[in-house]
Amino acid sequence: MMTVIQSSDGTHRFNTYTKGAPNCVVDKCTSYLEHGEIKPITQEIKDKIMRANDGYAKDGLRVLAVAGRNLDQKMMDNLDSATIETVEKDLTFLGLTVMMDPPRAEVYKAARECRKAGIKVTMVTGDYGLTAKSIARQIGLNDPDKPLTVITGDALKTMPDDELRHYLEGEVVFARMAPEQKYRVVSMYEKMGKIVAATGDGVNDAPALKKANIGIAMGGTGTDVAKEAADMILTDDNFASIVGAIKEGRGVYSNIRKFLIYILNSNMPEAVPSVLFLLSGGAIPLALTVMEILFIDLGTDMIPALGLGREDPEKGIMDRPPRSPKDHLINKHVLAKAFLWYGLIASIIATAAFFGANFYRGHIFPNLPEVGWDYRQATTVTLAAIIFCQIAAVLNIRYSRQSMFNKHFFKNSMIFIGIIMEIVLLLCISYVPVFQSFFGTEPLNSHDWIMLVCIPIPLILIDELRKWILRKNYKK
Image (cartoon, rainbow, N blue to C red; front, side, top):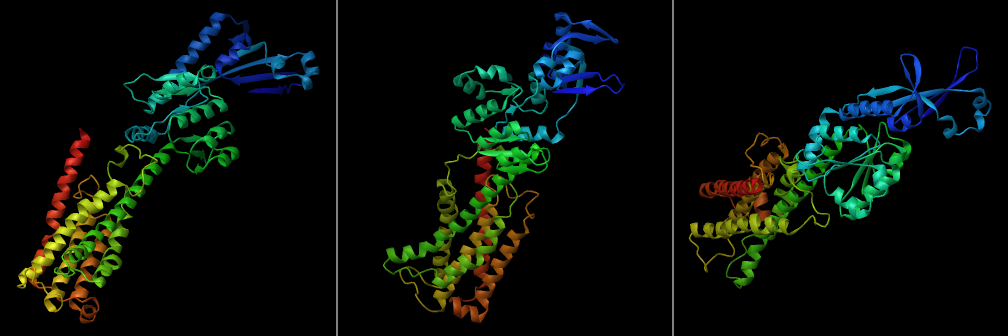
């Protein structure tokens, strides 16, 4: 950057001052200023200046060189037609300006979280190479046990794609990069099958922001061009906020899956009575009536399911690798957990509850009642068993790997409001006559309640064992 200043001493002299990268500025200098005296610059002095520059840069400091010259009368007379090349030559080196721009304290933690989450952060900057490398080390951008390669824009110009791909697979920092080179780095990552989020604030960042899968412009310092090219604007200009957003996004996605597992798993114990009825040719009566099934789906399941959507991101969610973009929201793991784990267990318990209620009242297969008080009480017990299985399920599903017995157990009040509502609704349809006639239920006795209250205990303990095994295997 060059500035031409007219003297205010009445002589109408013009001075030009240039600031920029030390290596570029020094190359334009033929002299240097020392103790007020202008001396011819030698290669030894240039090397000394660059050693000083490198020393500052290794400490993560940003360095600008400043030089200037007096314009002679001939240059002043032709100033309007002069070019930068003709003015910005034969300069006198004036000194180095050193600036400290320390990274925010939270950036180190954010960079470490990214590494744990399988997110690679690559610095692509216009800074000097040694400065970029030092800052990358300071904020923990790379694995400290691996060598960090610095690639400059000049080196990238002649670098073939295969070599660039090789460097991108390792620990690398890009320095002194031009807009088209930033664009090339983003393009190469995408060719490697990566999902790329690019951040930037300047006009020269716009091509890369536009090319990336997600372009993120700085809201405070960002130019209008960068904001227009971006998909998202970061209002606080804080890298840590991006990591926080990723964590929240993973939490939301996980909560949607938990919601689906909870909603789907009750379908299996609801369907099993119909399957048994058909397979037995009607010898096994329907363990649930249509109204009781609707009561589960539209009544007791709703509030706990909504409560799962309000869960905070689970501990360790940023320790998991990124999800494949080809992975579906409802995949085999969701279906297996819903139907082959929670649903299967609930089906066994509900079926056992139906036969147990009949046995307790003196009825055994194949002489099971299809109507009457005993039948209605048996279906009520089955309904209640499913509800208590769902109580255990919502507590188990809250955490996919973490134990439910943690300091945040009571944090999500909606879960517990939902559980209380389930029990209140069950009491209403069991003991209020108008609801009894509508749903075809009967009151439960003390024996039934003892059995029902005990249902969640083994279910919770079994699932806690499963999670413990998962955590142990994950650590290994």
